[in-house]
Structure formats: C-alpha cells, structure tokens
Length: 256
Image 1 (cartoon, rainbow, N blue to C red):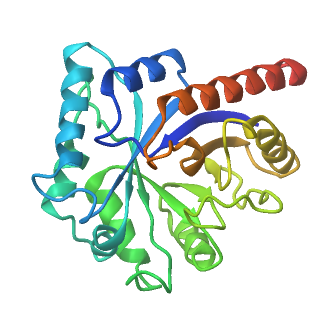
Image 2: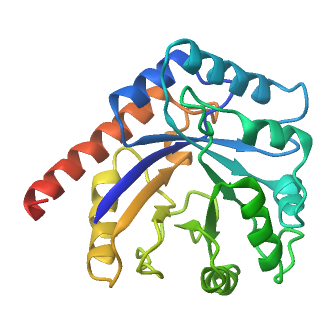
C-alpha cells in the first residue's frame, strides 16, 4: 500500500492559518480539506474570506500545501448540472505560488436519492471535468457505486473515497476492498488520532490483498474536532504523527 495523503477535513474560518500551514509543512503527506456550500460559504462570508487569507499567506511566504475542496448541498447539485456558481468559481480558480490550483482535488459530496442529482449525470460530469481541468473525488456509498463504475468506464479521472456512513464519522465493520486497479482510493469513517494506526492496518490488509496498484489515502473530520465541532490543530498533530509513524514502520517491514 502506498499512502498518498493523510487528510484533515474541516479547516475553516476558526482555524489558525499559521498553525495549520506549519503543521502541513511538518507532515508532507498531510492534506487539508475545506467544506463549502451555499450555506457554509456565501458571498462575503467568513469562509471565503478565510480561504483568501490562506492563499495570500502561502504566497507571501513562498509556501504550498496539499489542499482539497469538498463541495456540498446546492453547490454540488448545480455542479452535477454543469453549473459552477460564482463563489465556487472563485475558490476553484485560486492559485498557489507555482501558479497551480490551490485546491488540486474537488470532492463532489452528493448521494443519489438524497441530493437532487440525476443518476444519468455522467456526461455532464465528463464535460465539467474537461472544462475545470481538475481532479475529482467521488464519495462511494451504496447509492453511488453503480454510477461511479459507469464514470470509470467512460473515462472520468477521479479518486474514490469509501465512506459508508457518508460523512457521519461512523467506522464500518470492515474496510472495503478497492474497486479499481488504477485509481487513488481513500478511506473515511470513524478514524481518530487514537485509532488511526489500527485503522491503517485494516486498510492495508484490504488494499494489499486486492489486485490494485495500492495508492491510498485516509480522511478524518469528526475525530479531529474540538468541543465546539471545529478542527483541532492538536488533534490533527496527533493524527498526522501517529499515521506517519505507522506508515514508516509499514514501509520498513515491507522493504519499500
């Protein structure tokens, strides 16, 4: 198994930018994920302003970080119709010090049957990716799995995130075996700083016993929140430290 990212989801206007960036510099596999929607990120709202400040801080200090944008609610429903609202367009167009996209991955958090997304949106998503020139993440659950297989066959470039609880932070009984041979495949649901080592062990077992290239990542949010349901830098530090230590030992044992 090759661990590509250790994702800390939930960075927002309550997160100290300097502390967050310092943490990402210390852990190169670290990635931040920012949740956005019409309710979370309205025009003139604190979240968009925070992302602007993050972008400016990175440029002023000649730094870059791994960052993903997780798109929710009406904004993702509009995306699946090929519509990018103005506020989202600004976020997608933000650049880093190398004039590359600040958010290199866009996670489309829709669930068929819950969100107003048609099961035949495949051609729209293919056209949208061609227009945005951005890597998608698709959250895989029972409702979406058939569509994700169809998009794979049609040539959409995406990463897949296995999260049976779909953002509820519930740990599955077993970790799903990878569905694809050549796709970056992530795991979420119930991962915390205290259990990340054992969860990585379970994920590695599923990945190493499957006919895939083994490129993997993990994503935690609820397990990283403080008592006010905001991202805790201290919990992120423990999560990244424990995951990195596990991965170093794993690579040593595997001889890679």
